[in-house]
Length: 180
Image 1 (cartoon, rainbow, N blue to C red):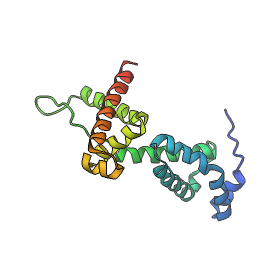
Image 2: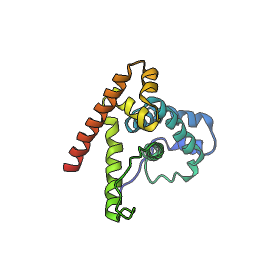
Image 3: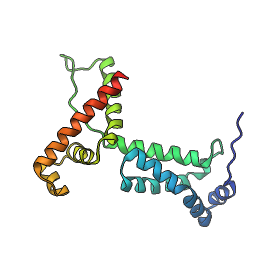
C-alpha cells in the first residue's frame, strides 16, 4: 500500500481550525498550479481565475472532508477539474440531432451522440484563437455575425469566414478522433 505524504499537513490542520494565515499560505502554494489546470481545461484565463477562487473557497469550506487519502494538491486538482467540467457542461453546444422516424432516438444513437458531443467539446480548445472566439460567440453566446463583428472590431465577412473555418477544422478534428 502506498503511503501518502502531505508535506503541508501542519498548514492543512491549522486551516481546518480556521487559521486564515495558514489558508493564505496554502493558497499561495497551490493557486498557480490549480489556475493552470483551469486554463488548460477552459482555454480562458478569466474563467480559470474565477474557478480557481471557487475551488479554494469550496476546499476551505469542505476541508474537514479532506482525509489525507491523497495529497492536498491532488484533492484540489480534482475539485478544479470537477468545477471546470461543470462550467463547460453548462455551455454545451446544442445541435439538431438526427432522430428516428417515430421521433425517438435508439439507445445506440444516443450513446453515439453523447460520445460525439464529448469529442466536439474537447476539440473546440484546439481551434486557432480567432476561430474559437467566433465559434464560441456564435454558438455559445448566440451572437449574430454583425454583433460579433462589432464586438471584435472586424468585418462581417471576417466573422463569417472564421466561423466557416472553425466548422471545417472541427469536422477534420472529429474525423481524426473517430478514425483513431
